[in-house]
Amino acid sequence: MTGPDRRAAVRKRIVSAAILGPGVVLAVVLGWPWFDGLVAVCAAVMAWEWSTVCCGRRGLAGGLLIAVVATAPVLVAWAGEWAVLLPLLGVLPALYRVEADRRRPLWIAAGSLYIGVPAVAMAWIHAAAGWETVLWLFLIVWATDIAAYAVGSKVGGPLLWPSLSPRKTWAGLIGGVACATIVGAAAGLLLGGRFLGGLLVLSLILGIVSQGGDLIESAFKRRFRVKDSGDLIPGHGGLLDRADGLIAVTPVVALTAILTQGGLTTW
Image 1: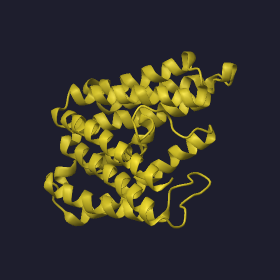
Image 2: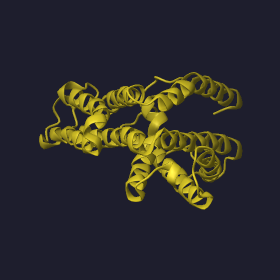
Image 3: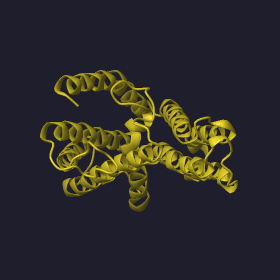
Image 4: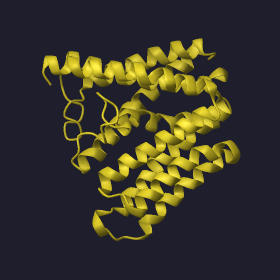
């Protein structure tokens, strides 16, 4: 990407973030039903993108995927963590090992778990661990993405995994994780966290996991030979392209909250 093209891409990213970011933060603070509704809508959009990439025409299996992942996070308010069982319904198409009309049932099943489980985990974290924990994990993922892109574009250097992503560099990975650690620790303390050492370690781990989520989504797109999962967000591609870090980080935060029986304000 040339200098002018890179600057244009950065401008698009900044404008998109400035428009979308405040609305997301407001929904996080307001909670039910605004936040759960936002999670449901985003899950449905990501399911639509996933089924379009891997199936072309979505058909019945794609419709089932969209319905399941959109319904699951809304049920958290009544079913709690048991709502995570609903995405398993999306696995049912995998029982039919037939690829008629370019449909790929196994990929639809994978999409139900890949999108549905983090969507339920996100809604559950908000309900069980508080909005502070949700905002904190958002800030970590955003810091990771921004720093990885900025440092990787500026420094360049050896590629992280050329066969999966031709642009991601080791410099970007290090910069993203370092920024996630600093931002996560600082934001954690400001939002009510108690122990700096624990916040530093957990933020570092989540920064690495977020970058891993980016690579997983790159592998998915490489498998189906597409550059982006969609074109919904200018400068970012599809919602799956934007949320890959959140998809990876959210189950880790949910598991941490379960094991510690708390959230950010008790860590």
